[in-house]
Length: 392
Ligand SMILES: Cc1ncc(COP(=O)(O)O)c(C=O)c1O
Image 1 (cartoon, helix red, strand yellow):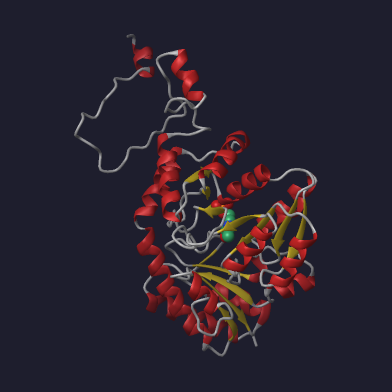
Image 2: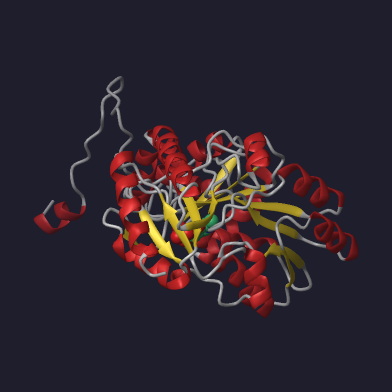
């Protein structure tokens, strides 16, 4: 081979039999080839195993899918480039003109916008209720055929807890599919419930380090078989290198999730007794309205702690700006602590009454508690609360 040819056809290095790498290699390849046209066609028809083009699948992304499916307790999974990608592609795949979707005021903002604006353009209608309004949910499901019941638990940012059994019972009784964005609860929780499709932003606890994005839909084989062709066509593919990093994140996922929850519990307990704080929203607190339900549904309560400061919007601003260890930015579930004052949440598409129902006040602040030393975090929160109190 001449040099330009060799540069394009490097020597093949095979790992000998019986000499496995301890960490699976990254298959950073878009294309896979077979020796014959017949083998290629048989593979494309699903009659033989194999890979062809990354947009459909790749060994590294497939390994992540199989791991996630097992952790969530379902048969299969399809991954994609972001959590919002997983939500959008699933919604577009499962609905058609004339369908009706039930979603919630407390639903994550971009999901609400996808349902209210993007699906609406294609003739899919929706009803927006509060997540705790079981009578309303039953009334709507009984009054019109509904394709999907799309919800979260805990909700972002106020940590409301959905009654999983009631949601599933009502959806089943009226032939609707249940779509649970399980990002805050994590890939190890809620698998005991008969949810049809679990959606995840892998950007959060699965990545864990705030350096890679990804999304997943997890369900039984037949639903994933129905979703996968649309995920391939819509094209929001997860890169193999991102899949490798997410797979690596899973190795420490369980210890991280537990440590996040432990630190978050301590911060929530501190906030719940502080004079500057009107209300603390954390399902691990015995005083939280969702506590009993959360305890019956979850083993750990995650990293998000929200609170309403008595000093309102200005107090929230001062608090967020005064924190030294918390980055003021979006996202959650990474090793470092984060803060978002109410001014920086979505919710502008909601009416004043809906915002009241959503429970977000002018002084609401969302924290995502990281893995720093708890005493340093408590000290930082204490001094920032003092700065917020100085506003009054
Ligand atoms: C509940 C929930 N779902 C989905 C997403 C979107 O995920 P991504 O940022 O990976 O698109 C987020 C991001 O904050 C989220 O909090």
